[in-house]
Length: 226
Image 1 (cartoon, rainbow, N blue to C red):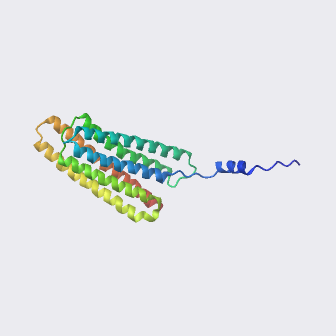
Image 2: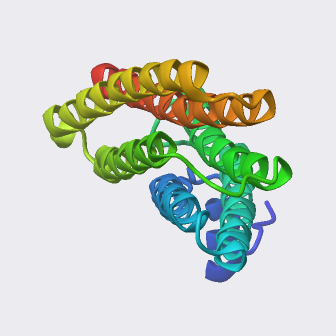
Image 3: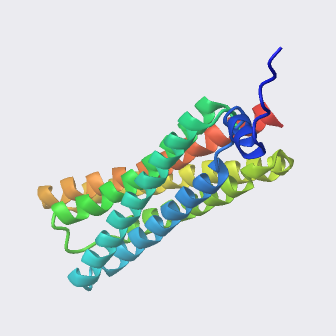
């Protein structure tokens, strides 16, 4: 009987590695995306704040938001690539897909607000819009905090607390928008301005809705895995 020579160690290890489970760096990608969201929300507040004073600075903030949205898209695509190549994943595949796409929705909406302000040629902003922008920023900061804790289900109680805070902020945004709309329809005589600000208010409030969507996904992950 002819004996086959043993495989070399390097070749053996290479073949073995092909069948080893792979776990992508999903939590790093989630955190990187959440960071872009917070930076985008900060740029949005800066845009709304400087709009009354400086067209040049407002344009700069829009460019920052566009760059952050592009970077977030790259992170989303890398997450999808990792999802397809990984043999095992730290969370359910559907949860990973749902979470990263929902995170991406937040920054897409932030970009929509910036583009709406630019396309509608808004030259002044209201205090209500700035307050809504600040609520959006607070929601995004808490999304980042919740995502950062997902690496361990031992953090479950703290994560759920943060998710509750996001829900409270979303309710605050609803309340702020209703007041803003009421004042707009009572006091704004120019129909064109009314249409502009109605769209801006609704988009800003929707940013908090998307943050709440992410909070709901994270709550589900915690309850399923803890």
